[in-house]
Image 1 (tube, rainbow, N blue to C red):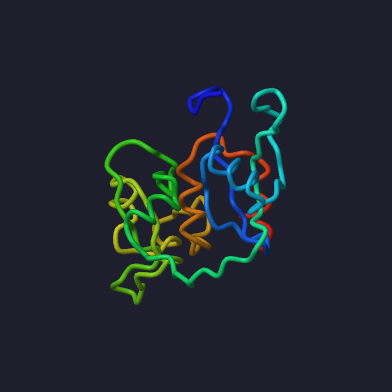
Image 2: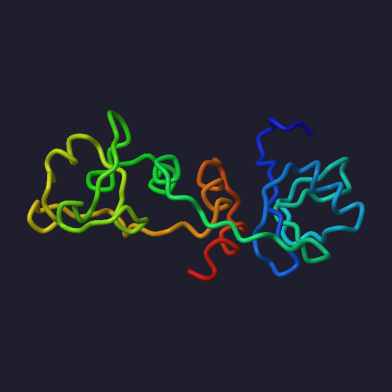
Length: 171
């Protein structure tokens, strides 16, 4: 089995409380399972050497305390949250920028729920007006991502369906 095969070979690592804490390679996950440091939670149906099931999700046997790390409001994280797409028209090509839903001149702040990615065309069209005045609508509600791991997951292609219940069960 190779890392670049047709199947997805990343494994979600859960703390003993079922909170997602990391994404690792299938090889590292197999080592954790073999050493008894983790248990398999979900498997993808692939076999290693015809006898070991390849995990999609593993849970650590012992709780690992993690320091609280608030997710930083940055351009990079905004682009990741909004999937590099204009939140007004959905365009993903061309020059992208950051827009204040409520303009700063009208008291809008630099917060997760007031900043969105948009194309230059929509940003110019909206200008210094609110959404109603500009006759525009957002494609979704801006939000603070729950964790850096969540943003990391948004960058991955072919994310297994079994992962979603651990990222979205509290939302």
